[in-house]
Length: 193
Image 1: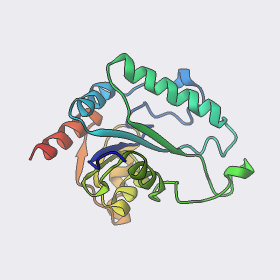
Image 2: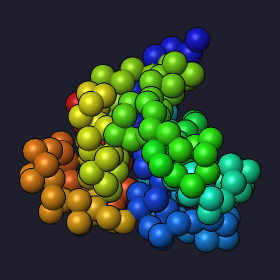
Image 3: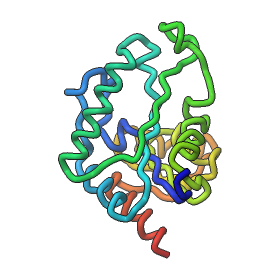
């Protein structure tokens, strides 16, 4: 078992990659400007970097798990081209009442539930209490709250919409950043203190 340490958990769409309705092909994936540089900064600091993403397009029948694996492979390639890497990537294909029967369930992996975080903590040795979540949606912020992570909202993707509804939902974030680069800079400054 690896030594436990903090991690930065990242939502994929709207945080690392440009928000699109449903990305179902690798060629549709595009990094948010500065995303690879931000991930590389985390890598260089020795901070584990983990994607946690709801991917209901599988349950909706818009793509297969194999096609999703190809999309995540493309994400890794795009990051690698810029000298960055992910320590792990987790996804939840499930969606209650979805079209594809075997994924038509609501279980512990779907954000804002904490199943993906708990699995990552077990798999690669993460101290959740000292970890961060960077997201652009309410489910990301709820996930951080449930798991005791420091919540960082980025204004890319759906972040501006999310910011407007957080107080209505009784949710607070620890920091709001214009994008993933600014979020990572803030996190690394916090870790240095």
